[in-house]
Image (tube, rainbow, N blue to C red; front, side, top):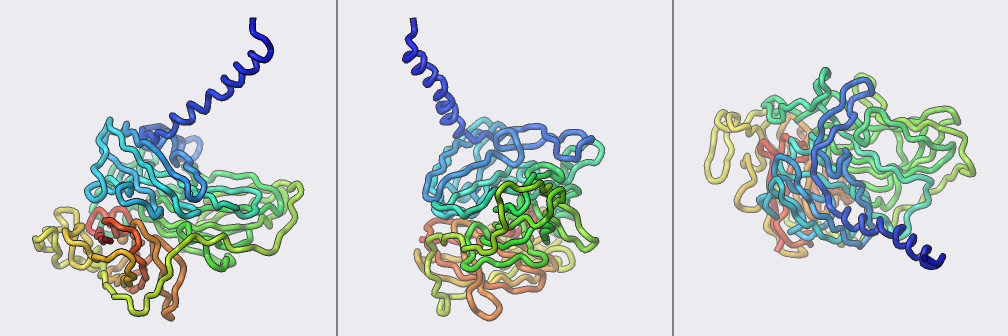
Length: 456
Ligand SMILES: [Cu+2]
């Protein structure tokens, strides 16, 4: 017979059993699934996911902790995971052909790295990313501060832009059509937040929210605004701003970029606050926050900056300057560019689906764009000679944007360079390895805007 004590021990053991399950759940399974992406009433959409849902598994660690995930590839294509914005060990960066081999269908790969910086990051496929990210292979990676800010809710909102067949709701399988590649990239016909059309997040009056916005779209640049919410931008691309910036009017969010907001609900009870995408023709709501009478929340006025991450000192006055000229695309067609050692004409390149070039290369060149000694500071000037904006992303590092007046702007890992614009960044090359540098309009990357730098 069981004594009561034994029974309690036994039930404790049973209650603890899910811990074992939790250990096993460190698998990150890339798998097909079906999800209601289009509005209710439309059919469901076959998607590719990490863990059965878009966005993928919510990965959340404390600053300085290790992320250990075994990627199990149950997809019909090879894949790999890039941990966007993490100042990561090079071998874990997830770039096939540069830092690892693609993980074949049926195979697996152990990702194991430290997350050194608190903030809002994300992970996504870096193999055939133009297709795989568009099919849904992305998820949030949230690194919590040792002492997080005082908010009532902490919400991650991942924005995505889908191209669905309006009859079947299937993803339109035209990933490498030349028009998208040579123009603004793959723009969709349905925008979702967290894999849902027009979702709602109930809030209370005067509640304080932390909103972590992540743009997982292939190519869409959002101009965002708030309605019924008032507050501050507190971080960009994961990194805290030294001084929170009041949200006034619209703020841009290019592909792969993140913005953390701390906002107070100012809409009245029974009202609806919203996150809005402002377009030339008026725009549309992305997510709604139905407001009910809040419990004890009273309006708070002041806000402190988030605690800074441990970033290097940037002494950039004498730092060597490297120019990266962005070339090609519709209306500025390439005359010629190199693939390897071979110079091809614009026509030949177009036949290969290559419409863009970085410093004359329409593919990641053999030699690095920049060969930096460990710890050196460099400046890179992106010169956009094309007729389209591009979101330039460096792997393994954050950099400071150099502002027009020559002073240092925010830390970022992805900088938007408008058509005809030149933008300078200052980079402390303090993470050894071979790192990609590319446009995060994923069709542009696939059709030529891909380079790399070495730190050793
Ligand atoms: Cu681009």
